[in-house]
Length: 207
Image (cartoon, helix red, strand yellow):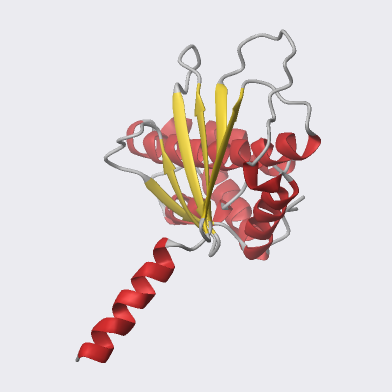
């Protein structure tokens, strides 16, 4: 019994110290004033729209997506150096990257950076945000505005074609629901089925 308890405790401590990357963006003047995204090395991801968000959204990134994010963090010295450009630019929202785990805890904040790797990393989190926003919008539209579902799907399709999704499997439950729902227009059902098939095929690019 003591050995089993020790194993559980060791596993819990290891999980707590597993590497994770935390991104946040605070932009009070925008339509999305705050967002926080935590990505674990396993690809498990948590999305919040408030620091104390009572209903965070969970999603799973692919292995390729997760690897790309952590490789960029490594290129940025796991956020152990300055990223702010120092240039006089408009307020673009205060962003932060934080690396936790392995005995390390580094955080860097910036409004605008010229570092190409930091820009790529920030774009990954923008893609995750865009994906979740499509998920939220599709669920809301399917519930309250069935005639507007096809328009929501067209907007999603644009993001698909522009390679703006990350963790796209989070969209599948709602896409399947629309595709199989007799209450929705045929073109919406067909579009939902087509997007779901594309996501399942894994053809979306990860760079």
